[in-house]
Image 1 (cartoon, rainbow, N blue to C red):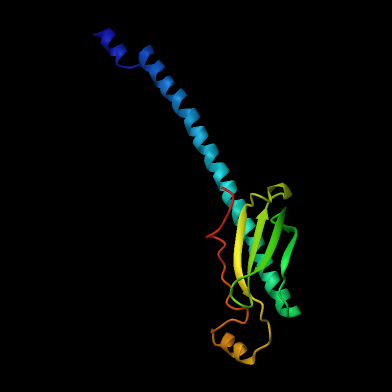
Image 2 (cartoon, one colour; image 1 turned 90 degrees about the horizontal axis):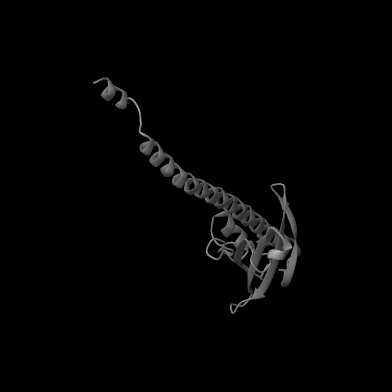
Length: 162
């Protein structure tokens, strides 16, 4: 009876070895999943910041177009600092089949070498007709038609890079 009471208080060597084997198999899998989660979180952060850079460039283009009464045609590129990092952007403005409308594509990447695989691509359509129209101003005040031709942002629908 004394022998049975001792066995009930502990684990056998086989039970301990099986438990260690389970931990040895599960722990690397758990670490791999955690590592992938951290990588994915960093990627989403970078993609969100790249979206902000592209949106800022589009707004800058809209403001400069309205101030200069002409829309940028062709290509442009540059570097922008955001969130303590440098971001590289490439802008391409091409006419569409619709008269006075341009398709503007802005690619953003974390380095110049990633131009062919941008982190984010924003596509918008802007009107090249920037004449001052008092009726359009009244419609703007009433929440109606916009003077920029109702640019449409398709950034989320056409994002590149993974």
